Length: 222
Image (cartoon, rainbow, N blue to C red):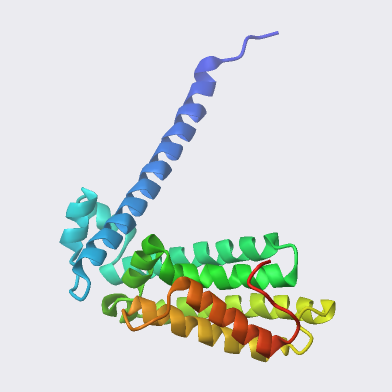
C-alpha cells in the first residue's frame, strides 16, 4: 500500500487554517469595534461619538472599520441587532426553563426589569436608547421585532396559565400587549433618568397588577 502523500495533504490543511484565522480576525475586529462604541457612547451621554474616537478606543485603523461597516450608522444598527438577538435568546431560555406558567411570567418580568435595574445592563440599554442610536434608520424595525417576539412569548405563557387555571381570567393576546406596555414604561423611566420605583417595589407592583388582571393567586415567588 502506498504511503499517504503528506505534501498533498498539507496544502488543504494550511488553507483551512488560514481561512479559520482570517474569520477569527474578522470577528474579533467586529466585536472590538462594537465594544469600543459602547464604551465611547456611554462616556459621551448626550454628545455624538465620532468614528475616530471609536477607532482610538478599539486600537484599530480606519481601514479596519470600513472592512466591517459602511458607516457609523451601520455599526449602530449592527449593535442593536446583536443586542436584540441576544436578548431574544436569553428571554426564551429563562421562560422555557420555568416549571410553571407563574414561574415563566415572573422570569419574563425579571428579564425586562433587568434591562433597567441591573447597573451593567442599564448602561448598555442607555447607549442603545441614546438620541444618536434612536435616530439611526433601521433601529426601530429591529426594536419593534423584539417587542413583537416578547409579546408573542408572553401570550403563550398566559394561554398556558389560562388552561392550567393559574390565570383564569387571562385574555392572552390583549393582556400580553398591555403587560408589555406597562413594563416598558418602567424600563424607559429608568433609562431616561425619570422618577421610578426601586426594583423590589416595581416587581411587587407588577405582580399586584397581574394578579388583578389575570385572576388566580399569582405571587412573587415561582
